[in-house]
Image (cartoon, rainbow, N blue to C red; front, side, top):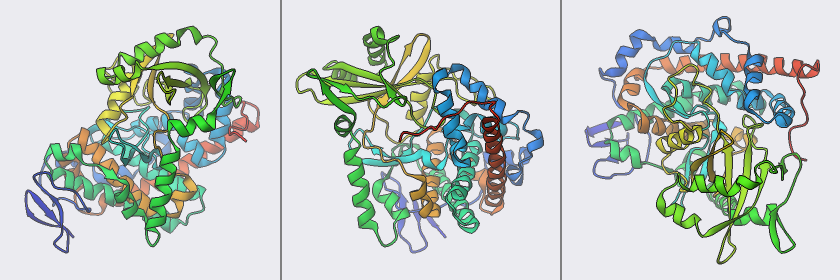
Length: 474
């Protein structure tokens, strides 16, 4: 249990300070005591146990039709790769089916307690990367679907992902249940802390690599720390240049790996300078000044992820004029959020701008180079490529799923506290196990639904209705 010595200090059961006003640091997990507040009214509108209900009969759409409807804005030649990747397993299907789940979540009652949704808060969309201060931070890392919406939609997508990932990696049902419990408890307890913290302290709070290791490591903390640091050093523009480029006629060029990385830019080649110029106008002046010292060297079309396959993604190499130091920028197409047909539309005219501002709202520290641009009336956002990013692998996370889920619950709570009313969420959650049981029920029921939807896609591929190819590089 957690003791509260004053509104400015939170102690754990041993009397250690978890957080103290005046710039104190969070060093543990806690939850605020239950008290009447704005979230209590939402319980009357949407009883907490009702969040555990999943009724396929009321979903109001066909999952396969929803998947195929997304193809309209994607590059047609890449669609068989998308279908192939999604068909590989229920887990890869889940990663690519954010639109399906958005429609399903919208078919259920919602609390009306609004936050800036990540929109795709599955368990592998949490990871590490370098902050502008060059320290590794653990946080959410995908914001293509970000939009203001009900807090529980992120939580539901998160907890269901734990069950789907567990099943795909032969994790026992008991450990999957423990992962959901730890995820929810981490979220609830940290929302309780943030509900009592001054807003400025919530804004500056950050989960660093040491805290992540504290969650996940048992007797191999030093080994895990060294492995993370080694991976982060490799995942840089200089590391990418060694791996992904060749020197041809004295010019550095990005190497091809068709169809996953190709110089398929003939229709945009003359626009690259204009595209980069528009992007530079979207970043702060000091970043634009830095970028003015670089020249565009090469660009290729790139296939990334699962849900993003078919969206136009360009990997662009720019070199610093004085020393030829490489910097890779990823220019990624941004369509409307999958939630926009169910929630108020974004007030940003450019969907790339929507993604960037959502990312800045949610993350504790955001890449200095994020910005947006437009190509042929298509919206794009821009970010650094591989800037210290350490992205977890499913089979590695599965080994420590409950511990990792707890750390992710902490991060999701912080994201919601930055953008929403943490006190209202804490009031709604309360201190009983009602919502833990509800999210547990929903997570397993929706994993069953995901299995059925995946089977529908596989059947459509097998009978020739949908074209699919092996979706992964050799």
